[in-house]
Image (cartoon, rainbow, N blue to C red; front, side):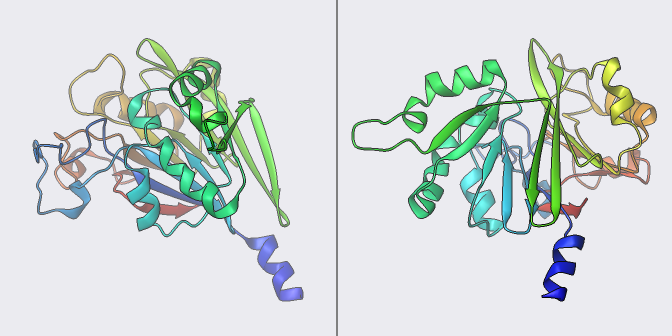
Length: 267
């Protein structure tokens, strides 16, 4: 029993980048790789989703259209909660795949999202949240708060939410246990939040491509943010098909790396 107790006291949070590709993934549906070398396995990128794991407790961030293959690849057997960053299709349209977990566990999964995303999900995937014909609801919509805390064994998992600009809409940045921030879709982080985001252990951040984009950070903007926030390690996600996994590393500081599908680390 003492060994088990010690295990719970020292259990780490695992963060997995399930997918790190931009909205069309790489390769695109027509097989187009852009400037990415198809011989490099890290250039095969599914759409952005992430997973927070502590013990057997799993929190999914976004349900990309590729979520089924992502979770099968990562051998995930249950999802306890889902946190959404925003309402765009590449973050939400895999939501129906969560039905498989309901069939196994016979329990609605709690879903957390801001007002606009909640409205979008309910309007477009009504059958997931309300009884439809003979099918039970598989999900339960919940209010996204500034801070969520969960006690798992002897551990506390803390998730903070920060609105950020994503072009003409807002997206959500999530900070986990004061060690890691995840922001897959962003064009501006508000200055007022910089203080709470400095000196993180990990920053997983949007870096769409090299040129400017109205709704995403490009490489120059991301590197400027890194200088400002000074995380110990930065991981670039939401990568489009002109960012080759190996070639981009020639332009990066040692503590900045491109993501790849399935990349994970302990917080």
